[in-house]
Amino acid sequence: KHGGSLALGALLLALLRVLNICLFWAGRNHNRSEEDSSLYRCFLRAREIVAGCLEQLARFASREAYVEVALSGCGFFPAAAAAARRAAGAPKRFVAVSAAGMVQRCASEAILVGVAACSATALFCEDAEEDAEKRGGAY
Image 1 (cartoon, one colour):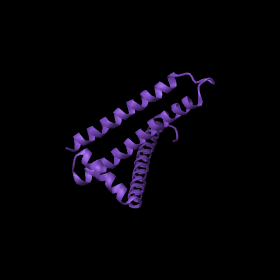
Image 2 (image 1 turned 90 degrees about the vertical axis):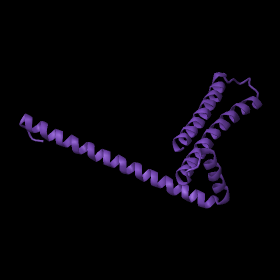
Image 3 (image 1 turned 45 degrees about the vertical axis):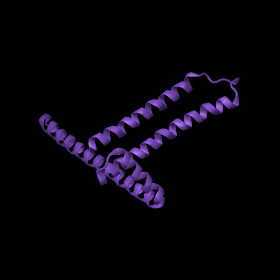
């Protein structure tokens, strides 16, 4: 059930990404010139903004739906609906929890990067010392 929910969310994000790319490509394919009316230029800009907002909204909804799937074990669409109800019902709490999750995610990434860097440094220093000993020189 969870795997299918993850796959459905990824599929929805991919479809919106394709839509965004198509809208972006359609606008970039047109060579903008000074002869274009201001209404048409406004339409082109609005299309780009709408496409970007749709993608960001889909990312947000999918992330929150994934969290709800993990917490409650329900399917993707019921989880997305529950997350939307929670966000609409208590927006301050929702923002606080989202911010805390972002801080935790950033801290986890920083810890992983630090551990990887320390491990790489330790391996490099060990290899450098062995190479120096083989050459008979100092490290």
